[in-house]
Image (cartoon, rainbow, N blue to C red; front, side):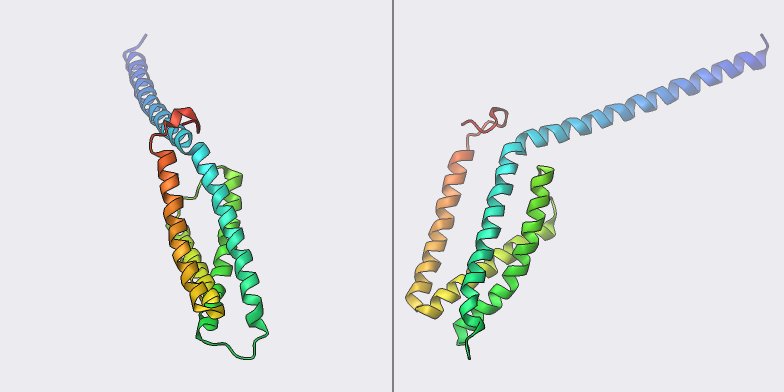
Length: 179
């Protein structure tokens, strides 16, 4: 065996060891990343799917309410201020809610929520516009109905929030939805 051959073997062995170390480190990082994804899915699994179902119900309900409430204004000869506010709010809410409903279907298909900030901002704008449209529509009928809906809406949000947090506050993610 020549000196060049022995040096080549040592060099090749060193290169193989270095490549094995790099591959091992890369495999460890991929395994850690997969473990983090799996843990996140376990934590948000049922809760995330339930949130997707609830949002689909909310979007569909708000679209239905908006379509029903805007119909009388389509044939009206003129609109007062509250009717104009309702129509403008619904004209913003309906297309945004429709887009969110489509995103919601994709989220349901993928079994996870989108992390997009633009979707979150659109949710706030669409739901607020729908709420304003409904309040203005009731206000157009009778100002007391508008005030009553506004107050009931805020109470409803408080009740939902309190119920949600009470149900989730001591939730163990490993229990899969059991309190």
